[in-house]
Length: 413
Image 1 (tube, helix red, strand yellow):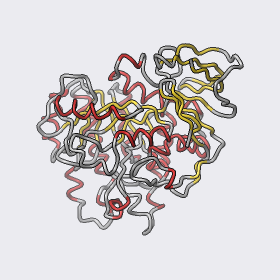
Image 2 (tube, rainbow, N blue to C red):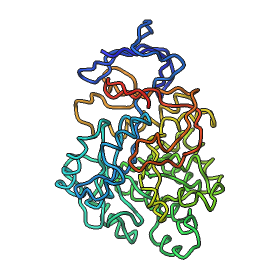
Image 3 (cartoon, one colour):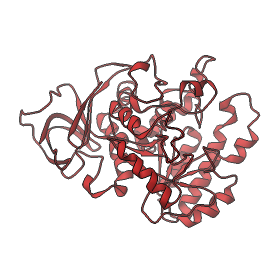
Image 4 (cartoon, rainbow, N blue to C red):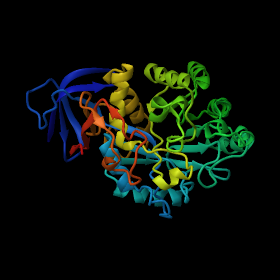
């Protein structure tokens, strides 16, 4: 039995408590008043339900052609370092999981990970729903391989067969991207209007085909009111925000960092960044999801889009608390509770009630933060195989002290 005691933050409040985790079953057995007995000294720290990152790119598939960037073992190490206890991996691989065989092949590879991995299946021009119950991802604009669509009609023709399924959308309109391809900067080649137009169509598809929809890595304030209106009329839609769209904006770009801070969708203006922070605070945006994209240093210098974030997930949460006044309960909501609700319906029985809350019957996976112990981001400390971070050189206000996976304790470092 693992016994921990201290300040607990669930999505619905904070309280002092004692937690007992059965290390045989990996589940929480008891949560009650403090007893004065704890296997770890957690004074000054906050015990959260295990954080979940529901948008990562682990890069491993049956081809093994991209494991030089990352694999399921190294993505697990980076996740633990960042206080992340479960992740959901995107399907835009060279051998994309678009049918039962390919999905099963990729799922077998996840056995090397200590953190739980949920796999998205891909939606492409010629795909059909799988027999098993899984989340899906649709890329509305160009991505790795051929998992993207060239027109709205092509996308709708395919989505119509996914009625009622859980589908996440990368919202960038391919027609606008094509029309903007000659602009002088990456940011102007992928303008905010491409995301807004794609958002309108994604919301139409979610509502028309009764999808459980999610909008990935949302970046522009212009689409937030459209999401709010859809939620108000009962559309089943949620939205992600990434650490890079919450921390950086295009006013911070220089000739020296422009390639390192290139991603899709790109950085937007300061007003977009602040609007996203407020949307996250008030529940319009539902998740902090990293879009962890572990490209190598050499690839970034060649203009490849995407940045890695798993190593810094927990420390970034303390930045939201210190710089923008997020309460611990609000962090639990966007980093644990909502991500848990997203993946719990896809989990195996051994994980009990799943992730997202500290309560009996849930997975004994926890994220423990010291909000007042600064974390200096250094390249050599990163566990991701790509070996760098966009936060390199920054000091984040707090750090992960322990990550607990089903009763097994991983100290920071």
